[in-house]
Image (cartoon, rainbow, N blue to C red):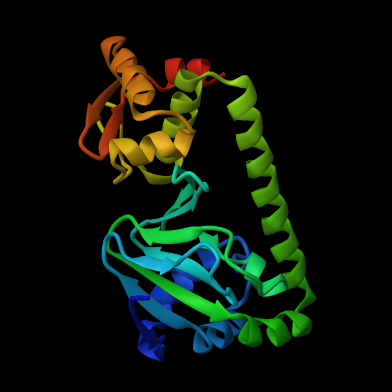
Length: 238
């Protein structure tokens, strides 16, 4: 599961910044962040390394501090589906804090990645002392459920090009860097992983990307894309 170590006080400023980015901890004061930081464990992963697998026992949440993590599931016939790509400041594994059962997805490093983790036994009493944290956790879970419902609706009502456009806009919102030409999005995904993210075949997704490029809406690069016409992509996403 990668290299693990306790987060030292010398790492405080860096860890605090990323903890505050996570919705659960954004409103905490410095004292609360320092208290939480003392209970956290840092984990480092290399690209392709699995943090935990679907079905593993789960009792810890994680916040990404550097790099990217993908969450995916595998069907009985071996097909894979990506539930999401997470970057710095984003949190996952929080279900295990309320229900320490089997993991519902496999978490794999898309790039060299650093995370901080907090176990159920450390966070549970902390939440009980600070009810506002429990409320924030419920809001985070509600947002996760809302995104799941949106994804299911997209699979039913939106065609593949529309899903591709919507996925690219979401990746741009979280990972994009504005440039003179447009928005440069280094998503670090293979073509197969991008297809898994939108729930379609690689061939169909590649066809959509080629069409968008021919129309001048984007420029496709290796594990990246430059969005040249955000407005048209947004209209295509519906």
